[in-house]
Amino acid sequence: MTDNESACLRELVDLAQIRRLKHRYVNHLDDHSSPEVLADLFIEEGVWTGPEGYGHHEGREQLIPFFRRLGANALFTIHMVGNEVITIAGDSAQGRWSTIAPCTFAVEGKGQDFWGFLRYEDDFVRVNGCWFFKQIRAVALAGGAHTAGWVNSVPVKF
Image (cartoon, rainbow, N blue to C red; front, side, top):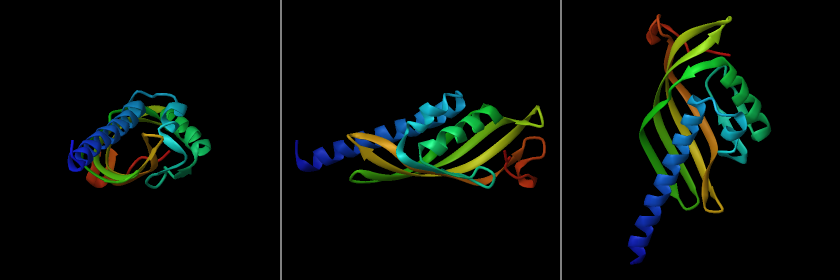
């Protein structure tokens, strides 16, 4: 195998591992997995930053209670991620995904249906041969109550 072929193969493997990490993340969110399982997808000092109302959470000690609170308020979610762009530079990478997320949140003791249209902007790092999130940034593009339509609504806050 030539050096060029080896580099191409490494890139394909890295892309597959990063995609799998992102898919594990959204599937764990949708399956209401334990907050610890979600936090373990990040490096120890990993960061999650979201739109207004979701905050900035740095390190697993902050990520775990955030994911616990998110799971308690999200009665139903299904994150559909696509249009990915992944750029790899050695043991670091950046990814961007467009996301459509129909969901039901607990609002004043009742379920309320919402739409979320997000862009995920993620930083990754390879540690001991495995890819982890260094940072996830969830950027709200539009969203809100299903019945109101997303044009006239704002993203749900908790």
